[in-house]
Length: 214
Image (tube, rainbow, N blue to C red):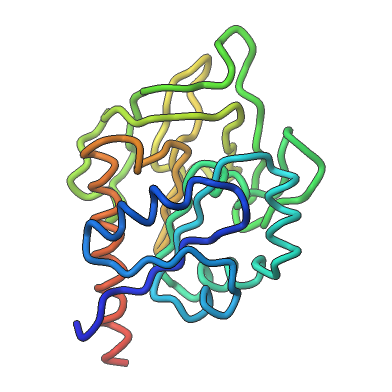
């Protein structure tokens, strides 16, 4: 490749962006923390991370004009990785607030059940139902780091790529085509988490090669 993959790390004041940038830099990508819709549209790949609340995050996205660039990145086949609240915001609505989500995934974000310590914080296993290319080389039932009080509940069970037990068995990863979205934090999950960022950087580079031949 003549240049490093340009990966937009979406900045919508939801935090957790610098650690993602450092993880991608480790694997030769050129990640840029940005809230610029034009840059996101032009980037080779997109990472949609975040920590925070649904309503404030969605308001920030709309005020910055980022809804369409995010949806277009997914629909146009651009490699797309969502992390934590990034996964939750892809759904239609949430128990956490009143703002509608992006609606890329049909379904609702639900509260974790009572009877467990909330938030769910710390290491837990993810059982993968199938392996997306961004999960290549990640052993099944690996432990990842979680910090959350809500979980995604997609209507279409076919896109559920991973599940985790915490009071119930909840969806901790969804995947299809160019998209992987996870509830856990790969950048805080040691070598198995970094493997996901390595795989994602390779996917972006591969998609650039394919595009150059069109």
